[in-house]
Length: 168
Image (cartoon, rainbow, N blue to C red; front, top):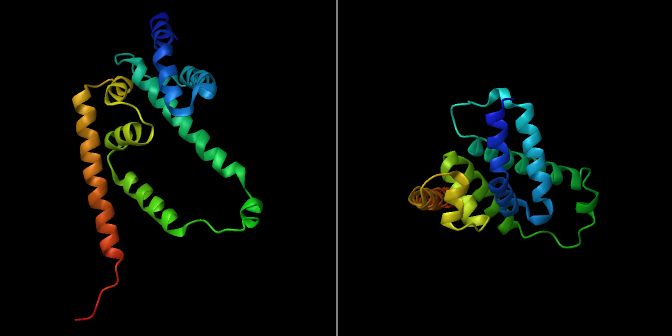
């Protein structure tokens, strides 16, 4: 790894840490940044040296966070032992709505999905999201607005399609 890339990675650590805190909280942020930098070093040959490194690192960090979340969910109750001890069943309507939202989110373009998750779920301000994605605030506002409109249309369409049809 050349010196310029190494210096750019070190210079990006404060921004990575802020983004990690917004994703995972302050207790896990340092570990997440460290894992990101290790992953980046092992995959440095995939980096295009003509582009800025911080967005690439943020992508690695976000993917690392999502992978850890998925792994944690899978590891928590592998054999369903805990689920079998539940006395009260979960709210099926809320579960179905969440499943529909997940499916609708996956239908959005990546940029729109990331923006609406950053602002709507993670609670980042438009300015913070714009800094994290290294784009103008107006772009984030537009992505979030279009994502919300698309989600509304997708969820309304799925609910309408799920209604039973009456014979005429």
